[in-house]
Image (cartoon, rainbow, N blue to C red; front, side, top):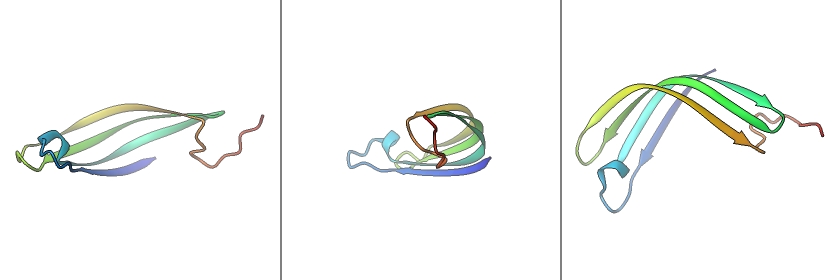
Length: 78
């Protein structure tokens, strides 16, 4: 499934790595198995840091695991 993401970080200490915006999108597959969900995908992410003005982007490959979370609203038989 295609997806988009956007995250903005801000802290009061002024650290460059904590004051940034990340945006991107890609495709991922969600694989449910009982109460375990696995996501695998690929995306392009771009990050802008507010204080230094640095910016970079690149391809990201990822895997996420979720346990005991009803992500897709499915009823799990026991």
